[in-house]
Image (cartoon, rainbow, N blue to C red; front, side, top):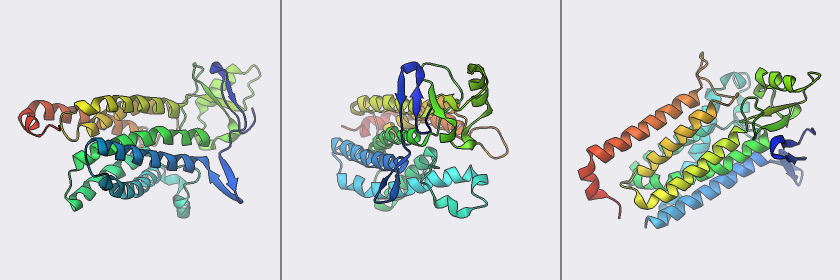
Length: 296
């Protein structure tokens, strides 16, 4: 394989010379950053569209989005750095270099929700109604943003020889992302034991497809929601459920310090249980109040 090639052998797909970046007037632009930016723009437009369906002032969403995007990016970077501290402790300036990746979606989600509640408290708005619009944009942004991992050759899983197996040249991936299971698996497939590529689960693709299904469910559910904030819970529960299983396949998990426990799986369980439990509590124990406040 060429160093920039990507293949899905069992699907008969072989992509030649897929670059990580391109040059404009001598300045290198990473596809990762470009795709993240595209995801942000499309996400905001989606949230504005939902706000109009809710008969909300779309200017509120535009205003909120400015702060949400800024603090989501900060949160995503801080989360990644916090759980990858060994990579940055000897070179603190590298914390500010995100051109090679290093954003954790959970940090972005936490940053977005924290911004939501602070913004709405200051503006005296309902965080639940605005959140119901924002989560549509959030999940769409995630769907698009995951393709940044494709160009960066990252966020993949363990060795597999399944239908969706993806091959990447060893020289195209970061050394720290190559697990022994990758090398062992490929050595078994090679007659002479020589390996110049790894074959992995494209977990970024799995998560992207899951999120696409989640977005479809949310769009279908929109007209039938029973209270403001319900779509936030659908997102938290749905994303948490899917992320728990996808994270179990990944080999670049961010771990809780001094343990072998993936922090993303812990958060996924917390999100799912919280969303299901709170929705059940609201629906069954606050039913009388809901009848008075059900969105028209």
